[in-house]
Length: 90
Image (tube, rainbow, N blue to C red; front, side, top):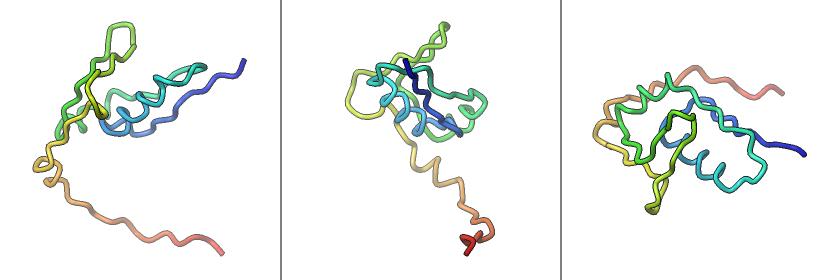
């Protein structure tokens, strides 16, 4: 049978939370891509209300929402710096 894996490149708290909730309903799930090194950056502006166990499994929160609390004042400290424009090739 075919299996599905969720590619979650940056693994920040919000994106990972959304990916894990989708993963929870996929019967043929192979795994969710997760890079713990990105979590330290995410921890600066959000609190995750779910747990990552020793068995590499995530236990999701049973409350409504994604299980993430965003500290908007902390997030506002990260200023957006636009990169160079990359127009679509003709």
